[in-house]
Length: 180
Image (tube, rainbow, N blue to C red; front, side, top):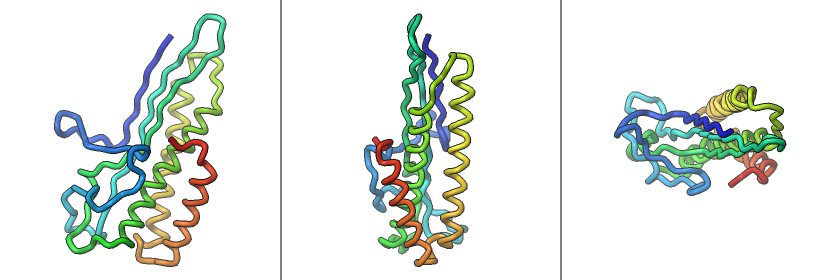
């Protein structure tokens, strides 16, 4: 039996449903050319990066065998939805936005670990279990993104920015086995 379920976060249906994106596995380091969206001139912020996580899964099982889960989890950046105001393209600000992308990848790794550790006992609850795990980690990701911006005052608090860089570096190292 095979079931496929896909969840995409931050999909906007333009250009026939396609929004340009790249995965962290394909390009983990941002540069200002990745910020192609129109700046929000009403915003108090100088830039914004749009990132998200998607996953898909399949159950692979044969009669008499244990249920096996095959999955793909990615973190993405959406350049057309990311922007920077003219004259604000500094390395320091880019490092702040980079950490937002790193936080999304960190949570993709957390989901990969949860899925790897998951042992389904029947086909019935897999969809519900995986959705629950995903939603929990996605809430954690959003909360961390908001806490990061709050504590760093959107990059203005340089001391807090430095602490967050160390924190995310350590967490990325901790979940290094779940990177792509």
